[in-house]
Length: 237
Length: 128
Image (cartoon, rainbow over all chains, first blue to last red):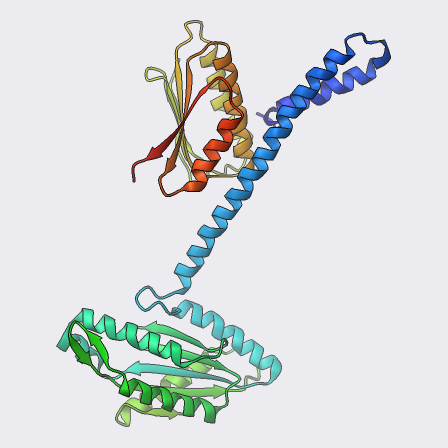
């Protein structure tokens, strides 16, 4: 079937109208009848066209909604409801490039819950999940600028991206966060669970648009040192 | 007549016609690369079926989730063809299927139904 077949009725009406015009319309006594038929056909097709547009606008909207949902599902961590690692890496790369252009600092916190395995072993996995949720939400509400980004990086590890924040400010913010988490009481199935966190901080003023991974590995090194030095503390390299 | 059996792909629906059941079933999604080419055999088959001298009845089940613009044009043409057959006295029915939570798809069915005068058009809510 060719494209003409899809628009067979439309083509027929056009062809007929052209024939009538070519055959000197003035001499045609049936002209009003022919015209009436063409008009009827045209009206029907015009109505269908309006319907098609309406249906397809709605289809486009429907697809767009499905697309939005998929985007959300692919960028959000299912358990905690905050952004996931995939989204964080994308944003970090973007911020790194932006900071490089503006010669501005970008800070990164790598956060790990201390002795999280013990929480799971002592209170069960469900309590562990509740802790992850509570800490994620508490961290998210702690960072209020719209450019700050808190994400679950995996397991009991979280990351915070702080654009335009110097190393001193990042360390001070990290320590406030550490204090807040130390004071946080997580209620789950009648239990009151308290945990602490260790934080590694890294700040860069990027010189090249590439190599954003460096800030992550440095924060990781700083976090390792925080753990080595007794946990519940902030370290930077 | 032989049966018609087109398997579904990621972009095109499954199309099945079993003459003994007299049901044409179109189900899935409809974004064929060449919509006209995809549906040509369906139209050829239907025209042949509708021309059978014993004039058997026909039910067309449409169960599409997503369809592109040219597929909606195809649907309009298809329903037009069936409406014409019904006008000439053929026993033809169309069932438009939609999920109970898919209000859009219900409205698509209602839109298509508005142009039709002779054919029976039923909106059928699917069991979840």
